[in-house]
Length: 553
Image 1: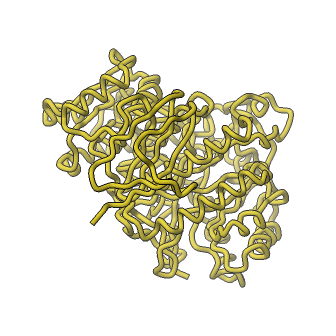
Image 2: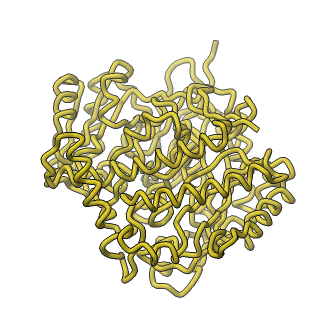
């Protein structure tokens, strides 16, 4: 077995044994309630599954009970559940490809015995591991090595195509204390960090350090995994929620370090949770996804798409709030269509996170997802490179500065979603390398940094800077600016539009007539109905249309 991420169809694409494969996968936390058979019947061959080193909550903020027993709770590791879960997938799909989500959080016993290696405070009353602790990192690698050795010796070895390394709060590398992972070891490590970099130890430098340390640990664990697998398999992680988690306490603002590493092949995040994911709104990426593509990394979107079948898993107040429940089936289908189309047209992969099991068992969802998987497979040979003529930039380091406005990225992403034309989004670090590809530039500027100021000056009249003072700017104003730069606007009213070399997607904000400005020589065919688009669509609000785009020769 050999897996890699290589450019194919104009975008980074998962390859298994040298062949490109559809980035369409399934996972559930509750493997006893898994619907592997359902997704296998849809043609899905790629699966993930949860693995836990310790029997601890995955979420210190909600204290949800542990999902499953940890492998390393006792003196001898117990792989019984993991092996059985692999066999469940293989029973549903004997030729399945599996990439485990490995939650490397240590057993409670280790943390209790190493108080100096834990945070000063817990999010609740209990202290958890501090990411600056070398002892914690070494123990994590030791257990990871035992786990990988077990997989490498197993009969199912050739079905394991990679590893998603998870840890921290909610498995997404958030600090357990939700304050930056502050403790005795972080103070020691920060002193060394400042000495090595000849820093004075300012508050801004400390805030940046929190992210630098998490990125360092992710790279350390990824390099270890690559070494253990002789670099045969892809390795990835959650990280870099630049646009969703602007607080420096998240530790997610050293994405540039991850992108520079050869040891990380894919990076993941859920789809945005903004506004509880209604129809009629762009469900944007948490990450600057085009920086990932530029650096050759595959982005995996976690489509934990709620449906009318999503139920509370327990009585905890956190899991009985609106974010956990989906709308009626008709709107759910539109959201599924949007989440799928966003992944397809932005050139990345996705997994459908059936979190508690049974979220997609309705025949309407199965039929839609089956068609989506078919489209995803057929699209492998298509041109999936972005057609965007507008680029958006943000500096992740801005959030370490005083005065950074957390509301700006949320609000502006919604506004940008209504441009009526596609846009790409990058870290500001990549501006010099990609500037010649675009006609218009938009700079999200929560607090101006030297890098952003330099790029704004370089862009000149082709650039628009949006600071907290412009947070209420209307989509029409940005659309007009883009038009003045010569950007092709596909729909001249507020609407969500995605586009790549072979596909176009429209999702309506409001009811009424939507006129698509289709360039001469282009035909659009609805991927779900097969109908030819005339250019005029009379649509209800919150309705999506995915078109195959063909160019006449």
